[in-house]
Length: 149
Image (cartoon, rainbow, N blue to C red):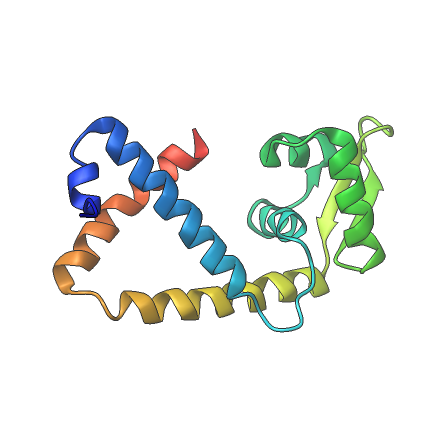
């Protein structure tokens, strides 16, 4: 007889396991709900999202934010620059530093992609009860804190 998610999640270890699996499944599902025609990698979209949210960032800041090595970030930014999604310029104080900026094309790509994913998620949320929505509303800041710690 299969064990229910509620039963597994009664312990801290079980909750961690259920939450991990659920978050991974949700991430994959949201990845599949991308805006049609967007062929950028999820990593490239994460970089565009970071720039859209935070403004200009250095290559080092982007690498740290996305938890990748600087050479990997350089490759991602090179790809985004070739597609005219970002521009880069030398830093003012240190000319060896590279500052990355999102372009209008990059901003529109992020906006369209988010709208597509948000529409799918809003539709799923619309299928929940008011009590379930309240639980998710209260859990969202906690999940954000876990994700960014």
